[in-house]
Image (cartoon, rainbow, N blue to C red):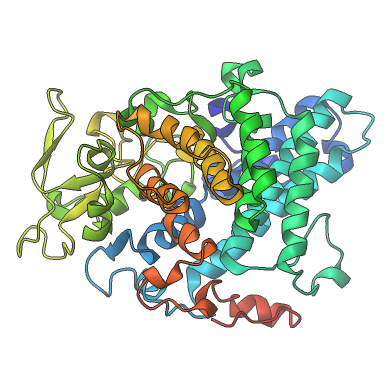
Length: 487
């Protein structure tokens, strides 16, 4: 899928009415005059629209900022860091549960994710029952669009709770539809994923050029995750077991190889958000990721020092667990030892070099050696691991911990990979929660795990009314039927 993601087509921007597209980024390419009826006239034309449906998944506001700002920083795994309280003040407000209806990134993410939903709806409408598009292409593209629509809806729901469901191109009278209940939203997500699964290919059947596009496993895994969020334990267990039984995925033998460019779309990747660096392109194009520079130590004068791991998170790792060194950088650690990229990382507070170090740690996952980065320091080509295979075992273990099944075996699968023996924790749920924290640490998961399992009290400042974030005021001004969240 690298090829299909590596460029944008101005025609797609015009056709789908995409407000985020910027014509000046396409070397003054003239904007054609085109209609849907003319455009959706061949399989090739339909396929050329597909990258535009995937594109919002990689935009900076969500996957490169808010996802880890909430998942890590708001949780007890990390603190904001950066250049003090005034650096990225909206992240400071999120971290301290002081977000408001005017918090800009919440508004941006609301808009971006609905752009993704709108693009999916536009493609579905354009090719459904279209005699100019072959049946196979119709099925595949509609399935991918439904997967992405479910992904965007899922992302909105876990941030904001119930939202207006948009399953078609809206007419003006529908612009002020009220919020659906969260139960209705989950049912919609489930329906889209169940509809997508039969028409998506197995990963093993995909060509190298198509890797990165949604597969049966992508939809099945996201559906399993939706079941987990709802506490549908038998359903989650059954589907996780089916994914494992498919033999489509494997655990990366070396945990440290999970977050290198060479394993993009690799054996453990169930769904990666694709990244690519364009020479001299600005970071906000959204093709590369700039999350790395946010989280790199400030000592070298390049990194911004955000997402600093806490001592509590550091202490969560058992003695001998190698996942700690691949997740957290401690002061004086040497990275990429024995290569031309070898560097010593300093994370301690220093009044000259690093005055804003708070915890004495930095995030390692996602950090690339200089030779693997783009030409600019704020560009990284490393894919975002959105869903990986280890989590399927952890979902299976969590589901069985609730139903009384064999939760130890799937937990062992994850632990044995890193040469850890059976868990020393006897309580099933406590064992699973521990394993999720250390296996998926600083992968934007912790906040969601705490609130969905009623452990929000572990976060300082959290109360139950803070579970969902404020609905942006500008959206409520545009749609008076959007009710507020009790944040």
